[in-house]
Length: 346
Image 1: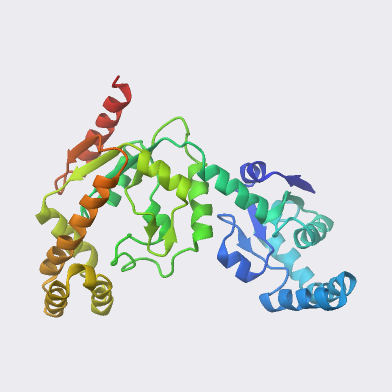
Image 2: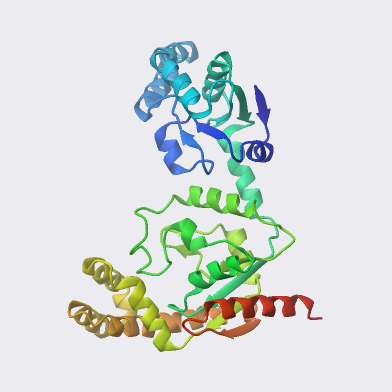
């Protein structure tokens, strides 16, 4: 059994099998990206062991835990063999790298597996994640008004060879009041979003720029860790200049197929800030399928908000890049050329 620091564990188990042996509720809050939930105890069992520990002490709690775990042991060994075969390598962790992961490690070693543990467990891993997010990454930010197609262009930048992280993809939300529409159900918890973001960063070359989309600190229910968000705020910003007609058309294409009730609920969320009259007009237009008019009314609210946020940034945009519908690849190339120009400027 090897006990490895989180960075070494992640490097050695990057493509291997990792089991999270904490309870399901702990796993749901956040886990190592790619880790499989194989709980030593269910949520209810973990609660019972905790109560027993407080009321009767450690030995009795251990005995109760063994009674719960015993009937499951053979199934865990079978699961491991079916996944990686006898003698394969498996990584494990629990909250602090103590009894739960140690017990599972002993069992799997007895069954012939090569086992490694996260030294300090998930708690140590979380400290490592925060340290990764606090590194001085060379970020470049792609900005522009709502409906500019920033996420789409990020993917074209990646195809052109740039390093890219899709924050909205990790958050499973597009950032606005309408951002949950058409996305996979349920956002990750903030804790797990940070895990996913750190995992993405660790795949990048820290000496080269990493492109991200301009975001507020909140993406739906997810918050971007402040030290990383501060890097985004201070990073070079490249703003897309997209005609209003193109932005309206993109919003209609992105959202018009969504359930009417969801679109109406999104309008209601921003009704006070849009103004009651504009919100009622948007709801009426939605009912008769005038989606372009709905988009125009929404942009009449979102555009001033973005302009205000732009004015509050520590540094002004380094470039404004024209972006027309159907010009994704040329625009991506123009952005990379502008990036090179700014890097070589005195």
